[in-house]
Image (cartoon, helix red, strand yellow):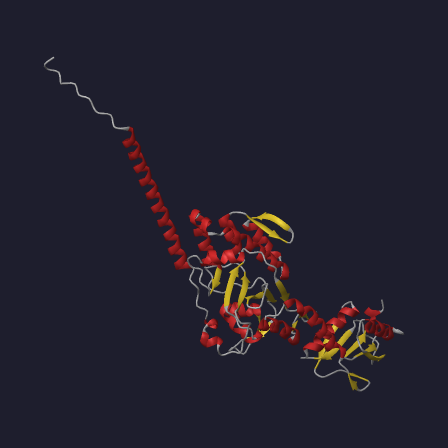
Length: 420
């Protein structure tokens, strides 16, 4: 007994202290996780700040815009939006336009955003260049900066911001957040990035505008503060997509992207219009309609509704064509053929001042002759050909054609193709 150590007893820790110790450890773990999460969010914030700053667009600098006589409604914002083909960072050139250039105007007197579409083939005088190019060529030559500079000079509309958006931008954003529920005029549906990409490549004109607006609204409803705080991987993918697929002067740093998304998520009707594009079927050249274009530009300059342009254009066409004179010659030698064509044209609203015989009767294809370098006559010749039908030939002349030794605006030589 004397060699054995004395018995000792370890006192039992009070239950309350063990519970407090466990709580302390759990609190420390939570605090460390919270700090780690804050650090991740801080890194994401820093990355977005670094990558999403607005780019310098010389066309929007004060000293440049002050040189023109552009205008827009007070407190309204006008944004030039160009949808381009896929961006290839390995190729040092601008991406071609994939759709009409859009002038989007919001705020000021407008209760709903106005979207004026300018087809890629519309020709403009390139400022400081002395060339006349289609908008698609302007984009390839100088990108969104040259587009903004040239369109501000061409339309006399003040442009506040620009955005060149790749056709892959929105699909990449949809891929980042997962399929989104897109609600449009055809109802609601879940849409993936690939489906949206295919839609954007096939839609055109007003349909394209509404498809884009529906997709942006769906994304805007997803990209909120809670999503950003709980989806760091997706946030990084969004930041990369915006950096690589969107070129804009506007800063998207920090919470500005989320603020913009929230603003775009609000359902709203769009006031959409497009410049009329008339092609010469023979040469495939664009016939510019200066006055109808100016009417539309004025709506953005003044902040009035674009929907009114449909009536404006009808009135303008009536004014343009009411004064035009048409003469019809029988070039096929078929009895009564010129008279039959005269009745058809007058029924369609054309002023036919007389009919007669052509110098020869060997005309096979009907021809409409008019003085060249006159946009109104060129448009009239196209529409006259539409009334006549068939493969009508349009022939511009150096001077006005003549009928019975008097000048006439449009001279129709009827061929055998009009017999039926």
